[in-house]
Structures are given as C-alpha cells and as structure tokens.
Length: 287
Image (cartoon, rainbow, N blue to C red):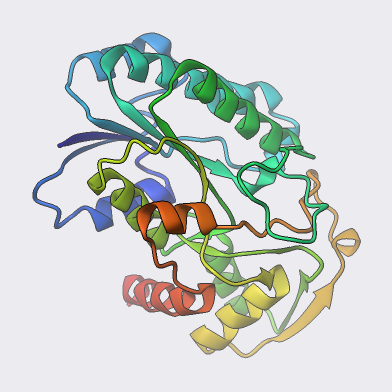
C-alpha cells in the first residue's frame, strides 16, 4: 500500500516515520514542505497524479498560533488553500485524505468534552483557518478522515514538553497558566491511530476527535513533566490574563473520543502514561 505524507519534517511527520519503520507492507513516501509545497496546486497535482497513492496523510500546517494573528495571509494559504489543493487532487487521483486539525476550532466555552458535531466557533485566526481548511476538504472530497487533536508533543520538533524541560534546567522558578484545560496528546499515539485507520481499510469517513485520555491544565502538564524528568523547580499557577499572548486560547478544549474509540476499537492511553513514554524517548535523544 502506497502512502504519501506531507509536512514530513514536522513533529507528527517525523513521528509517523518512526511508527511505520517496521511496517514492511506499507510503502510510505515522506515529503517535507520544501519537497512538496501544498500551497502549490500544480506541485500537489504532479505528486498525486504521478503515483498510485492509496492514502495521503497531511501533516503540513501553519501551527504558530500567535504568529497566525499577524501572518494571516501565510496561515490562510497553508491551512486553507493547502487543504483545498490536497482535497481536489486526492479526488482526481482516487486517494483517501487523512488530515490533521485542532481543538482550536472550538471557542472553549463548553464545560463538557467537545463532540465532533458540536458547533465550531474559533476565537483566533489560527483556529479559523484550520476550520476553513476542514470545510474545504469536506466540500471537495468525500473520502476523507479529519482528526482533531490537542496539545501535541513528542521528542521531535518544538513543543511544550521540550520547552518545559529546557526552561526547567535554566530557571529556579516558573509560572504556568492553570485556567486553560485540555488534554496533552503524544504524537506517537496519534500516529498509531492514523495507522489503525489505514490498516482498517475503513470507509467510515468524516471528522473524528483524537487526543490522549484524561484532563489537565497547562500547569498540571508542566508539573507532570518536571516530576517525570526529575527537575526540581518552584512552579506557580497563574491566570491567562497574567500571561498575555497575541492569540486568545480556548479555556476548555477537552475532546470527546467516543466516536473514534467505537469506530476503530481503539484503546487510548491516559496522557500521564504516554508522557512517561515520551520522557523516556526524549532522554534517549539527549544521551
């Protein structure tokens, strides 16, 4: 089975490469954003038309939430136009598209986990472009899986876990917001979920939520990272208003995973268990 992965140099793309390493029955072609610019319609057309890909996994995205507030054209080009280019060319080539989206499509005003059918109401430009990217796929391609995820981290790339470890070795104390609640998601678990969908040869297309199980604030996540990595630091819980950012974040973005669990018979690890695995993997990269 031949599979194309876009955005292969990002943390999910690199994690997918780790996960499929021993899958001998899969022929996975990894393309970084430099090797395949999804904003270039002709380049996407050539890539998909030249090979018989069964699936395209889109890991390419403009993910800098704060920068998206000022670099609006770039964020829209990658997250909306890029998604549309993939959808149209996947349709032409008979390729199933697996697209990664975000919890930021929600406004965070609910106090119960968000379901796939809940109304998307982004409060920032990043979330707005990701939602419009979803719509561009849905409106142009029936054969798609859109996976909304949250608080993605891994031993690869830039992410909250690695930032906390770095800051923990540089400082004696740190302040982290505790009034934003969601679920950390280990990229390796998300990559395995993507692989499960592919190996199921499913036609249950549509939007799915995927994050690890459990609930945490950023403060909880930071504390678990420091405890798990053996870093002694004084950690202060603060309100979001005490740490202003260019983009407003959802205060509550826990995702309901019932649909993906039931459809694909998935067992999703708790975020604390996955964090232990991630910290161990990260330790090996720093030896």
